Image (cartoon, rainbow, N blue to C red; front, side, top):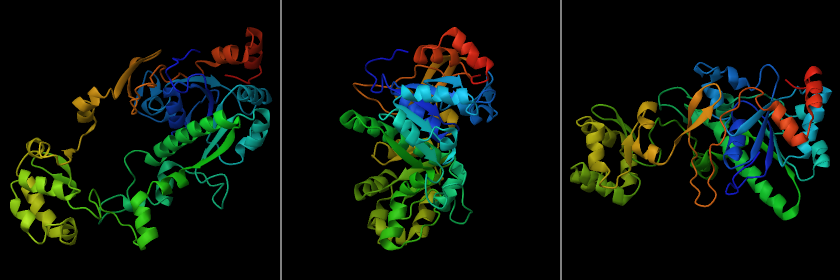
Length: 401
């Protein structure tokens, strides 16, 4: 399989035994940067997300399609000794292995880090799990929603007088995938300098705790317990979503210059002099009074009318877009955040574009998300040099789909 030399991970092979979102999101990012990602799936079933719908298109779930481009799918039965041998053979010629089986299961398969490190000392072996490879919660299963609860995110998400709420996307999974891709890239750089591979232990809980940022710092440094603020901010006012005449508008005023510009754009110069509102600290202290005044004012014009005043004044503000408005936004189009790739069953398939714009080594969407087992024969012949007879023997033995 050929790759453009401009892509930073061109020539690296990733053996992907992961499924659902965190692992596949990680390996998609590696594939976007040119890596040859071989997605290993269960015969007859494949990645769990292939069934997560509706919506489906061309027999594929939209969920599966979102995080599996730039990969080749092969079907290998890990319950088969011959299937395990195939994975061992692929691990010998791979640079990276990614899995998200529960801790200990890869050892039971005979595919644990120690064995594969002995087989291929240069292999970067990434284990993604709910709670990590050790500790009292090691053996607990977990999905994004549960880990967002355990990891503190759900506690701080939702309206102040409402119950804990999950974020609208599986953000703990996505962040774990991003961290994993970064860690793998760093480990490959380390390998280039030392010749040594290593084991990366990446857990959703660890990632979620690290992502609490200032909220965690408030507690660790000042013993300040977190609370829910809806779209508002504990330390900045105004910094939240308001209801305009027709639809919601998000406004963020985070420094004195923006405050001055905000007041003047809205024709409220008196707020600058009002000793209840003159500084951010005062506005935080008098939050309810100020927000009541501002809220009433914002309801008198449309969202677009306010934006026409706020944007030229350099006040950060924007509409609360639904998907229709988001994907018709001129900035989103200008930044190529929607790309189209040809899919064998669907035809032209729209996908979210790459978020990083690199001047010398841009990634690309080269391959559509693979159909189940689409590349089994191709990979076995190309990567392992299997003959037609060998492939058919493996298939008749049930080692491959």
